[in-house]
Image 1 (cartoon, rainbow, N blue to C red):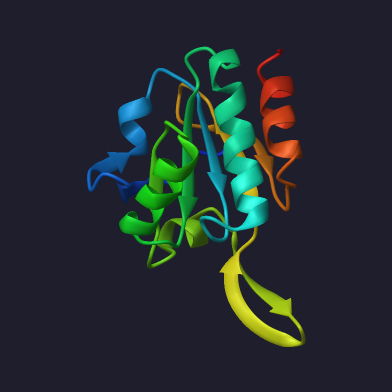
Image 2 (image 1 turned 90 degrees about the vertical axis):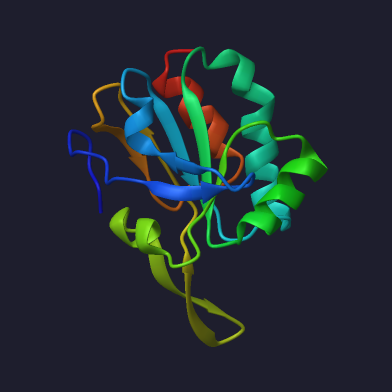
Length: 150
């Protein structure tokens, strides 16, 4: 698990428009990275839309969403809800593993591997400022605003 002060693991993933997005291109500004299990599901939609709704309050802080969905699914999600920030496709879950959010989960007694909904605020210097593991969709924007002093 990542803790404040650690360097944020590198990210180089394809977004919903087929473009490569790298975390290092955001050096000099804060970045909110949130991991969600699956686009267009109720909790993920709530989380993504809540972040969209506060985007105007976070100043220069960038928002990046990451899930195992393919870019086409991310695009449909963005188009449907007008999210307006990059949604990154971590289809091989390498970034999720680096951030410690690829976990064994259980539903109806069946065990499987998937994303543990989590969020990270990365500072302008590329280090983790805050790490929120097992965060709820409703708490994601609230925690971000609190961390930014808003």
